[in-house]
Every structure is written in structure tokens, then in C-alpha cells.
Amino acid sequence: MRITLTSVAVDDQQKALRFYTETLGFQLKHNIPLGEHAWITVVSEEDPDGTELVLEPDVHPAVRPFKKALVEDGIPWTAFAVDDVAAEHERLVAKGVRFVQPPTDAGSVIIAAFDDTCGNLIQIMEEKDQA
Image 1 (cartoon, rainbow, N blue to C red):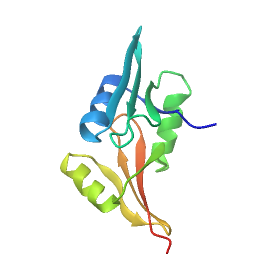
Image 2: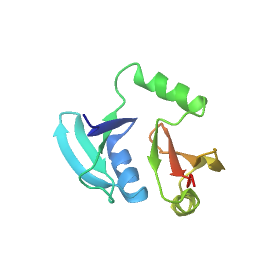
Image 3: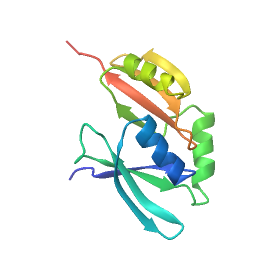
């Protein structure tokens, strides 16, 4: 068993697609119209055949209150691995990304969290050498 898809609920799929590709650097994998919405997935440029991130419309009545509660409590929806949190933080800040948590040492990882402009907080994390 392996993970092939994971989702992030977004308030606007087209805005999310621009942010996740143009700002974060993911690649579009699928964009299939499905009536009012679409099946949109993006993948890491570093692993184009890897896990796909679904930009899921947050239209279910339970989703928006859930997202709002997570943001109010400072809890990221998901986390993405990076090689260097400080460098990625600097790159994204230069692109106008608003961080809600700067790079922070959290023991075995360094983490930071930003607003994805689509109603979520997203964490980036760098695993520290455990030598």
C-alpha cells in the first residue's frame, strides 16, 4: 500500500492552482473540468511521478468551519518537506508569501508555516541530521 493522492481544501481552485504552481513551484499534473469545479492535481518538480496533491474545492458545509478553526489555532493543513527551510522561507518571502511562523527549531526538524492564500496554513519542514 502506498499514498498516491492527498488533498488540500481550497476556496478557489484557479487561485490555488496559480499559487501552488507559480509561487510554490509545483507542476500541474491534471486539470479535468467537472462541471462547476475540476479535478486538479499538482506534483513536486523533484518527483513528477510521485504523490499528487489534489486542490480540492472546500464546498462541503463542514470544510470551511474546519479550515477556519485550524487557522485560528495556528495548525497547518499539511506539511511539505524541503532541504533547507531558511532558504525556502527566503525564496517564498521574496515572492510575497506571508509566513505565520518563521523558521523554528523543533528538535529533530526545522519548521515554518505560511498562508497559502486559499484558506490554509501550510508547514514546510527540514529534517535535521541525526548523527
